[in-house]
Amino acid sequence: MSIAAVLLILASAFMHAIWNLLAKRAGVGGAVFVWLFTACSSLLLWPVAVAVYLVEKPDIGWPGFGGMCVTAILHLLYFIVLQRGYRVGDLSLVYPLARGTGLTLSTIMAVVILSERPGPVTIGGLVLVVLGVVLLTWRGKSPESEEKTRAAIKWGILCGMSIGVYSVWDKYMVSGVNVPPVLLELFTGFALCVMLTPHAWTKRDMVRSLWSSHRREVIGVAILAPASYILALTAMSFTPLSSVAPSREISILIGAVLGTRFLGEQHTTRRLIAAGSMVFGVIAIALG
Image (cartoon, rainbow, N blue to C red):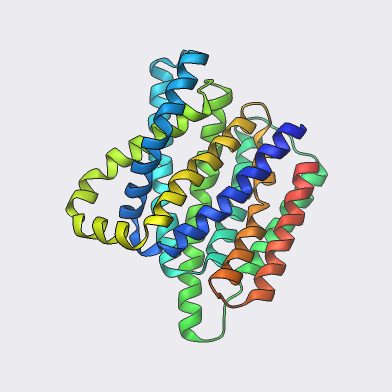
């Protein structure tokens, strides 16, 4: 993997973990929060997207447009499931679980669908990631803790499944259909905003309340979420997904640290060890 790809992926990982911390803080917002930050991000991305379009003049056509519609639907599912997970579970549990599951699925799908061929080191890295997931999802002893953990595990795994699917699809969009990453991200965010507008209209009071109480989080996610994914998509455009997806998962450890450090979440040692196992697995996958 090239130095340029490594730098893009590391920057993406840090941004990704930070915006998830902000999303967790505003986790009660659900679809309304998604509507707010996609509306803001669409406004911010328009000038950049226009400049990219004028410079690159991509020939997207109807197949590209249809593919971007699929991307928007997959990302809508991801954001709603992620917000639901943060509503019931800790950042240091849901985030690493979602990313670890998404990594495993996207790597497997890259092998099956995109015909990429990881070596034994990559496979060993996947084993470490799976072990980290098992340790991370070890349940507490109290009935209340177990019920909460069970719900967080369910939504974390569902989120990971959506990550695996959209990662493979978006890799195809930027490297197969040659859609510029900025245009893909703008279309996705704008489409999400449009699809959620009827829901936001019926929840106008909640929109005003969320904007009043979590304005900083909304703006932070509106900037960091698209920036993070644009960097990842750019790396995907010239790097195999089976290398990009695992390398992004350094954010697993960052997310676990942020959850325990800034949100006061419990089971710190076990979750950090699990996240560390995932990170070593990610390094092995990237080197493989």
